[in-house]
Image 1 (spheres, rainbow, N blue to C red):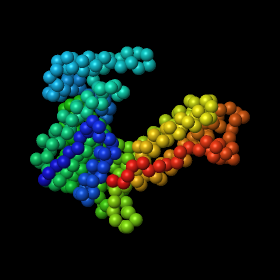
Image 2: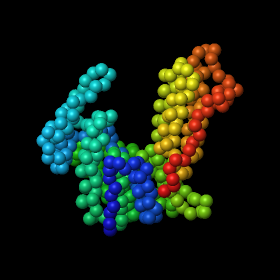
Image 3: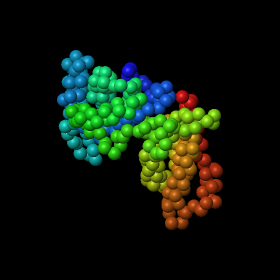
Image 4: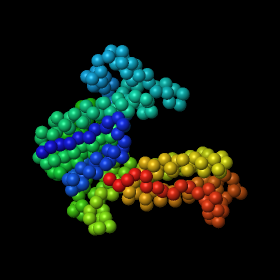
Length: 303
């Protein structure tokens, strides 16, 4: 049966990748989703193998030497230089491109050339940077691929996270839990539409939700002595940036919950500016009315 793959391509947004996945799952009527999570991917890339992959396409010796120097440059952490024997440091200009080239040869090419001829049912792969899911119509195909994946990644110095790599029966007819999977910060799950039909919904993943709250709480704690209006400006920017990415149909409730929690976090740290500066609920309500945080907004059309 035909196998379709969708690797990361420059210029493609995460939402475009999610749209492709949604269309394929809907056409298949669901399936078995193999959710992949690579442990410390950017820190475990083998430099020799990476240079070999790059040299397959790039024949310019000057450019290859420049990439080699960049890999050997090391990183500066807390004022101390550390040599890198493996990995591609996150935050570097060329790091995402090199990491994508490495995983393209490890997963994309292997899935297309080696896995495709051996599958019984239809399947699909979607990868965006180091986030990837494999979708199978046949459960046996999914379990066979899941068994060989650790060996495949191990050959290239990579390791799948044993707790986060899992096989999910993503079909509306399967009862009970486990009918959802996470990709690119969203949890995908089946639900009933207003007309009573089964459809795929998306909401903010729990780990991304908690991470956002931790980051905002840390920022409010460190900057609680700044002018209140300056704090408000920064919090508005943070929330608008969050809503710009997560503002898709079906996710309004999660965004509203985040705004509610951020308001409580802000008031909490404003109350700890001094022992005499605690805010009661009346003063807090007046402050939020004077300096309101932005309301959730759906900015992405339904797929």
